Length: 204
Image 1 (cartoon, rainbow, N blue to C red):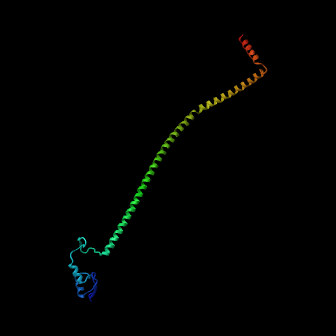
Image 2: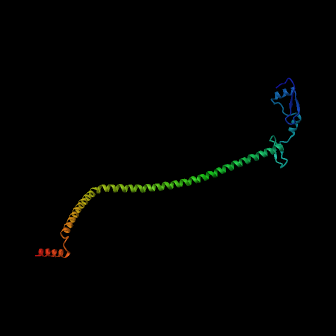
């Protein structure tokens, strides 16, 4: 602090210039005070003010030293508060909309999961059925292997019978052709007589 000369200071409350003398500077330094911000008149006015202020509208007591706003600043603060409130409402509405969309997606995913679980259950049922059919097929194949020798024997017998039947058919065909040659020019009555004579001869 300069104590060699007086100082010109500006009052924070009224804006007027006041002199901070050299003697005052020394006194403030001894007491450990800071440089004054108010002139003597404003200091006297501030000291005579009550410990609290009263609202002109509702009469509520306001603490001394608390924030005090002019009408223009108060309107600006209120407008800013309303703007922030509106922003919060919009943000809350956006969050609620997202929450609803999330719930809808959650419901859709739950339904899709249920369908997938049902499909898995159906596939498991089909797999069990196929497993049973495969087991039956394996058992049938094992039984078929066990019966194969018998089937081979039956097939061989059928082949032999077919061959014998073919031989009999050939013989019958030759017999028919021979009989046709023998009786081609013989009448039916003569054939009957011959047959009766042969039968009568065999009986004697």
